[in-house]
Amino acid sequence: MSIDVNNESGTEVDEQAVLDIARYALARMRIHPLSELSVIVVDSAAMEQLHIQWMDLPGPTDVMSFPMDELRPPAKDDEEPPQGLLGDIVLCPEVARRQGEEAPTGHSMDEELQLLTVHGVLHLLGYDHEEPDEKAEMFGLQAAIVDGWRGERGLTGPSPAPTVS
Image (tube, rainbow, N blue to C red; front, side, top):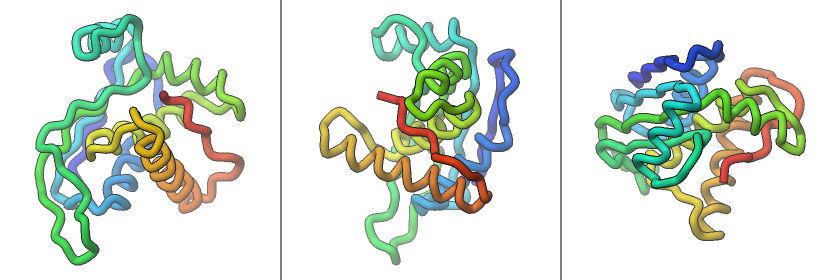
């Protein structure tokens, strides 16, 4: 898996954890090991510009995903996954910090960024949460991936509750 993490935000983030959880999520979703992903961490002004440009919505958001080759997980266990460019995930640590603090369980900015990274990966793979059944599927996968990653690392305490909408 070729994953680049580029922090342009001016905020110190655990880039290794973002890289590790992205890699874990892609492996768990059985994406070809030679596929490529880019994760960009930006400040709230840059995120606001992207949010307005691409979603026509005001203010910064937490995560945005920009798919390239529209890769999807293989439908069957014995099916060979396609190789390609997944696309870009853009994260905003300022929004992540606020969301983590406001979450019912309260968690760190880095924990929120890990959750948002998985959320972004799932969007790149075609998952959405517009409809209740889609939301249940996507957020269930998201929780399973975050919990699995945290479990493998022996991280204790509750996993961050989904704060993305």
